[in-house]
Length: 300
Length: 162
Image 1: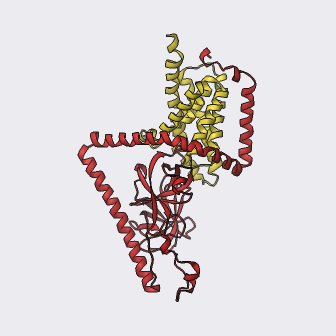
Image 2: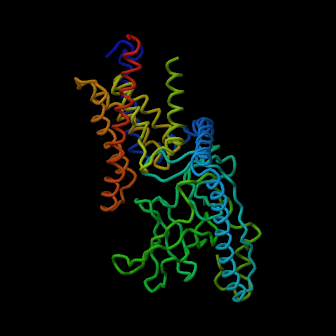
Image 3: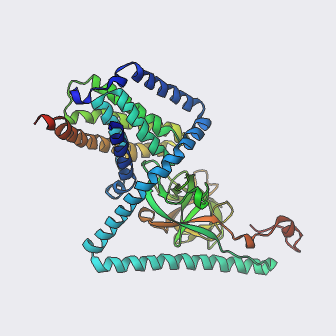
């Protein structure tokens, strides 16, 4: 070993082995008390997250600028810009059409049954994607909004085109969202045409599957899948994707559909975090709902 | 002085990995630069620095990871230590000599992560993960390590005497 790498006086002593031993003990504690140690590490990590967010935002801006520069000046210059604008418009319109379609269906059904009035407006916070998952094992993005902006774990993340994923960790100024293609994300979904509900979950192959569809469901290729709004985080009727394949499960008790997400998850720049899936005005107190005439089963 | 250089380097490396590196991976698999650097530091300067640098890099990774907190902290520290042990028993310190230890460390680190966080994975998913993520990433890590080790030898070790 050359002299320039010679350890200093401090590390030359037995202290270095003490530090290794401390780490080994810490690892044992981590293994035996995972919940407590994770909480402790998370608490210690919070200020570091805020510190790292500063260069991260700079790098993310540089990355975005470089990509835009490449797209604008190298790859098909004017066409690329036009294409991007058109794609954004199509995404927004697709999201809008699906939202309206879901609202119309909901409104028709509810108006006919209960004369129920609802407000589907949701409260969101816009966030920029400042980084990507560090590991190939998780499909996630780092967002530039955190607890200071009211972001909490389990909140849904969407774009005008559809569902992106779910917040899994927050710090003061940043948060981490797992994408819908990650196996650790599960959302209750509904086939828009047939109104069959199922569990939408990512796979380790980076695809999205809708599980537990009824065996007699007439779901078919091309059907739109939207959020059912039954679980927290997402409002009802946000587009998740389109069915690309349907197959029966191994035990023949359910059907499984493969879904192609509508949001281009590999090229996310900005997203919306759903702070409140329904506006407070639209929520009916339980006691009022129960005394409403003819309302036996309050609709979520 | 040395600590601040290390700190700036760690901050830059981490920021690079989560932003620009993602745009530069054409095959969908990106090398774990933090693992490569932790291993290389252990490989070239000994277990203790490997452990410390690995611990710091792993901690930063955990802060921005969706997985269990602490897993990267300890696996990176562990691979930094192992790379140091490897290097002690290695006669050849050429740039390509880093390939095997770092591939081994990458595989080991991925196995620990899998065992810890994906216990419920089916056999099919394990096979898929092994051949489409674990193995390509380990080889990529090894190749990046060869280049990085060559750069270290060429510009940090040999240059002053030239």
